[in-house]
Each structure stands twice: as structure tokens, then as C-alpha cells.
Image (tube, rainbow, N blue to C red; front, side, top):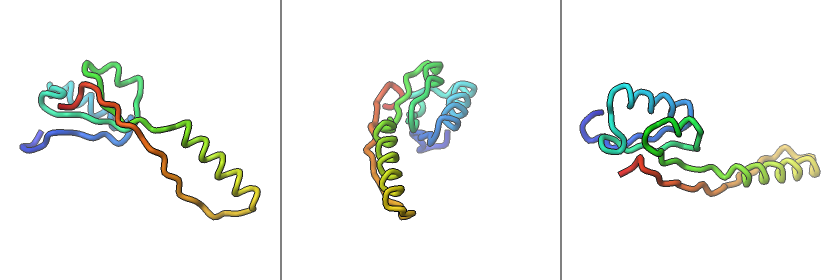
Length: 97
């Protein structure tokens, strides 16, 4: 890790798995050498010796909103989209200082 770098944020599970593999292979300690946060959780993170902090997506709420919007569009015969914001949750584990 370069000087001044204190943390890594993995945007998806594939990058997270590859990044954690790199850290183990290069004997970079989490969180002693670098903090780690991942977007979304995966069972693969359970294989890593340190519990990984992650951002939990509200999947049920996202699915509910998607069905609701799709239903409204089909009833109105509309192709117009709508932006819906669902609040995510930061689950703090042992991978951050």
C-alpha cells in the first residue's frame, strides 16, 4: 500500500473477493495495515479471517419498489421512469479502525 492510503472500498463481491485474496497473498493485515469496506455482503467474506464491514442493500425494499413501479407503468401504459432512493445500512465489523 502506498503512503497515506488507509482504506479500501470494494464496489462489488467479485472485486471484494479478489481484493481480499490480494491482501492475504501479500500479508497485508486488516485492519492493522488497511481498513476494508465492501458493498453488499456475501458468504465468501466468511472465509476471510477478519469480519468485513459492508454496506447492506435493502433488497426487499428495492424489489417492492420495482414491482410497484412496474405495475404503475403497465396500468398507465407509460415508459416514463422514476427515481426511487432506498436507504442502505452500514454494518460495521472488525475490518475498519
